Each structure stands twice: as C-alpha cells, then as structure tokens.
Image (cartoon, rainbow, N blue to C red; front, side, top):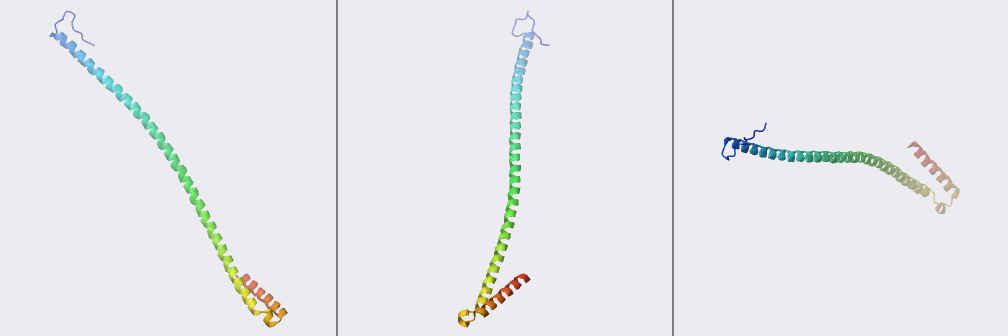
Length: 143
C-alpha cells in the first residue's frame, strides 16, 4: 500500500511530506534495482547462449577428434599390412637372390667340369652337365 501525504499538507517540512519523499526514494531504488535485474537477466541469457554455442563447438571438436582417431587406427592397420607385405617381398627377394647365387655357382661348377674345347669330348660334357643338373635338382628338393 502506497502512503500518500494528505492533500491539505503543503508544507515542505511536514511529516506527511517526509513520508512522500521516502516513497519517492524507495521507488527510485526499486526502479534502479529493477533495471539492474533486467541487465543481469540479459547477461544471463547471453551467457546461456554462449554456453550452448561453446558446448556445440566442443561437441563438433570431439566428433572431429573421434573421426581422426578412427582414421589413425585405420592408417596404423594399413601400415602394419604394408610392413608385412614388405617383409614378405624382402623374404621372397632374398630367397630368389640365394637361389640365383646357388644356381650360378652350380652352373660354374658344371661348366668347370666340362670344357669341350679343352677335352674335345662333347658327349661326356653333356652327360656331366645333365648329372650336375640332376644333383642341383635333388639338392633343391631336399630343402
């Protein structure tokens, strides 16, 4: 209930006038508090919007990190597969190299057994070469 000074009191220093002045001060304080409350309410809404925006950005970043993690896992798997393939290739290459070296040595050995120009015996040379070839094949089969 708002108290009003009586209409008959026109004196500035009367008690009724003081009541009126206090009501004006209280109304001014209420208006100021109301204005501040409105500002705080706006700031709260802005913070709420900012929080939601930041949460959205964080969710996007988390999804990006998860996607990158999945890609990294796939890349690691592919790297392992490539390492295995390279190991297999190097193993095959080493086997072929060793086989080539063995065949070269065997060919040189067979060739040294028979030199048709020096010995003049082509038939004997052919027999020795076929025997050497058979030895090589048997040695390979044993391995």
